[in-house]
Structures are given as C-alpha cells and as structure tokens.
Length: 184
Image (cartoon, rainbow, N blue to C red; front, side):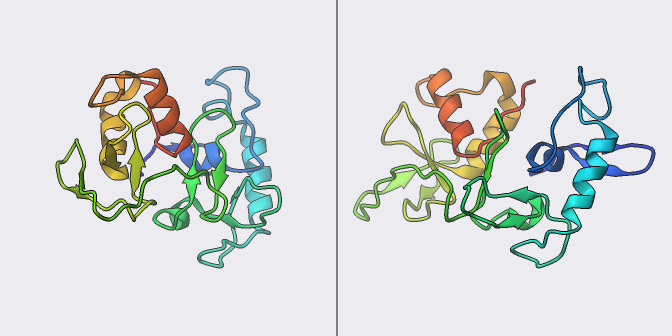
C-alpha cells in the first residue's frame, strides 16, 4: 500500500512505518509537533531498537513492527509483511498480527457456491481467505480485499458498504480486518 513519506533534517520515514512500529508513540501535543505528532528523538530510539531486531521474512535488521500476540516473537518490516498474511489494523493502537495470530472472519468454504465481487464483478475464491473479505451487513457478499481497499482509498470518510450503504458496521469490520480508511 502506498503512503506518505516524511522528510526531516536527518532522515526520511514512511507514515505507515511510524504508525505500526511497536515501540513508537505519538507524544506530540498536535500533529504539527515533530512529524505528525511523532517526535524525532522518539523516532531515533525506535530506529535503534529496530537495529537489534531481525525481520521474520527477509532476516535483515531494522524490523520494528511486531505481532501483537503476547506469546509471539515475530517482527517484520512493513513491506516484507505485504502478501504474507500479516494483518495491520489502522485504528486505535495500530496493531499488527502475523498470519498465525490475526483475527479471521468466518467465511463459508462451501465449494459449490460461486461468488462474485460486487465491485469488479470477477469471481471470488472463498478458499483464499487472505485475499477475500466478508461484508458484515450483507452476509453473503464477498469482496476481493484489493477491490475493497481501493474503494476505501477513493471514498475515505464516505466509505460504506457498496451494496446496502451501511457505514458504521461496515467500516468497523473493514478496519478490524486490515482495510485502511483515510480520514479525508
């Protein structure tokens, strides 16, 4: 997923990397303090912490995003996690979960049912749970994760179920299962 890069005197940093870093907090009083509320000295502390941590996927240091399951020690880089079953939640504490510990929707795996995505109209493989997301309001509606993410990026605050226009339940479910909804 594409996001903003911020440039500071001594470094550049990706917005989602700051939001998802396990040891980084927004300590600024406003978004104008530091970089959207993240203070430069705190960012440096998190960078130093990351230098001691190896990414579960690429085995290189600098991984600052960790699975939120208390018994899990997996850490990863945001780009390395993409397409590997990791789920990031873009609200509240900005939690991340590895493929083993992420929340999962109860998607029917009956192979006799044919689904099509209401957004792109292509068929949906209900066995591919990492790339499919179930609507909470229109119970038999499955979307391609990529289709629903693109709709969320385009609609922002106005994002809602494309079938019944439910906003609150739909947004809450999409956020829980890793869909990023911009505020604007």
